[in-house]
Image (cartoon, rainbow, N blue to C red; front, side, top):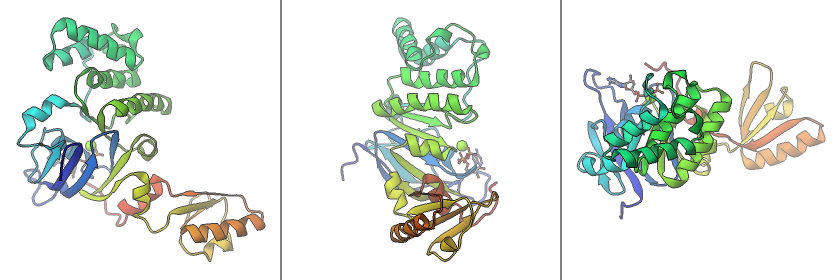
Length: 306
Ligand SMILES: Nc1ncnc2c1ncn2[C@@H]1O[C@H](COP(=O)(O)OP(=O)(O)OP(=O)(O)O)[C@@H](O)[C@H]1O
Ligand SMILES: [Mg+2]
């Protein structure tokens, strides 16, 4: 099969030295198109960063293989690196540099000359909406603006494969949404792989989602494809419990505030909604969200994560 335009992994496995036989990622096999936004989700320690670092050619897998557009992450690493830009999970801006200097130095490190890089830096900073801060010191900027500086570095580069490991963690809801807008634009131009703990973010931003659980890939695809992996595809929520839901087919869960959620089939949801209407209940009904899918696929045994 032609591997151009695809991200393909086969049995990708990583055992860090000194961690015994514990697999940080375990037999990851997937085949995705290399456009739009791909999000990796999973709990702390699920293996997201490990997978990102392997795909970005920063870390060698213990076994298995991965290719992006037909380029092998091990054998063709040099070639692939020219096309890749990454903002690691722990990335921070340098306090005593300005946003412009930050982007500029990154571009020069990638091989652009000064005058070319200067123009590209200014343009990228304007594109993420922080033009007015470009000559301030990074340390005087808010957390959200600092993240935008980091996003601007990858945006400014010529890389057409961009990795962002938890780009929005720790930002307030407004800054996060603001950054989402830039990320969704980025996803239109470049293949963007991001990791996040915000399921709502993955649901809204990503074209495709891979769910990791303790190193294993437990689901991958578009939201619609992920929905087909779970038994119940509809969710009904009510403020209080009612016999109608208790006796229905599906999985009933009760929240601390007394509200209930039933996950059920489309037929049962259809039947129940008529009954609930007739009895005058207020309820909400929707296809299952990524939240529901995630908890179903990644929360089966609740052992603590290291
Ligand atoms: N350098 C390392 N040496 C040994 N073990 C490591 C190393 N880096 C990660 N691990 C282990 O590998 C597993 C996967 O870690 P990883 O950082 O990939 O998870 P993650 O999904 O990115 O987590 P988080 O959401 O907390 O960032 C964890 O058990 C972690 O403790
Ligand atoms: Mg991580």
